[in-house]
Length: 237
Length: 215
Image (tube, chains in turn green, purple):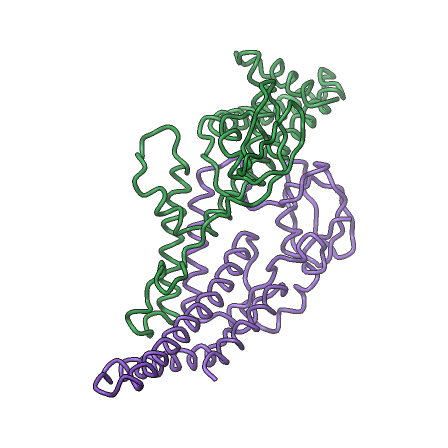
């Protein structure tokens, strides 16, 4: 049984008035978002809508599971409940577990990137509009980042920074020819796959060009395909 | 030589990266390095005041000043790198959600978790004795921070296993005695060497804490 069937079953089982297109695409979207996030050297914009939808569906499913278990327990003796019923519940449970895992990986990957490039992203998001839809970080992540930076700074200060000469106490020092702010390396090579029918031509500099054809797999510098990834014509693998 | 002490610190940090437990905080070494930086700073201040010598002397002074500044900066970076690594390890441990070890004698029973291949690169042990005061504070603050972040995602176990799940039910063997465990599918008793077939998400915490072993 593949994922589509299971998701189909989800829909009928819960009899929610979801439009037909969402269940499969939602799962696929999540996988793409997760893989992209894992492979990209920089933080990608947070998928606000996607996450909201998935989280809502998961809690629906969990509620449904609870109800069904109750229903199963109550009717266990009367013979209304067949073995298939338990199996169905288990399939749903397995699937929740899987989606759970995807989200877990997605969020944790983002957190690890935020931890790595903290100062860079604090500067980057400083003048973002907090109400706009396409913010780089979710509000929780924003909070996490600032809070984590605060406790880290406190740790450094308590350990040694407060005892150093005043000129050396900066954490985002860029003098002396070396920047202390860790930035994502956009030149890192990544594996990508083109998923659009339109041919994409990227310039490699020095009059060199590379055509990405549909379904082709390439290794390119991240910054060259960055824009195509954000519009979804190219996915990372 | 200036920088030797910092070098030692970095070597210690490098060793730490592959350990599953956080070693003792190198308080003395850190103190010595801070002292070195303070000395260097005094040197630098002194050198900056020396301006009335000849041209030749001025050049020498400037060169010395430059090297002094470089050494100070390098020391600072080493200190930061060392502390950062420790902070990361502490945070990594916080995600695993295991109780830290307060009593140094209790460490032995915890070695089994480290043998598990999944966790081989993780910080699976943390002895509070090895942390300095500021680090302990950081650990607590980070735990709070993590809880706050996780509370936004009530249905998702964010600190769970990062390996893809295969079965929802797994076979486990009990490694040490514990009390009764309640799950949705009934309860079982933790008796050493007994085996159970249980739902993975129910017992994940117990595996991380070293009560159970996945077969």
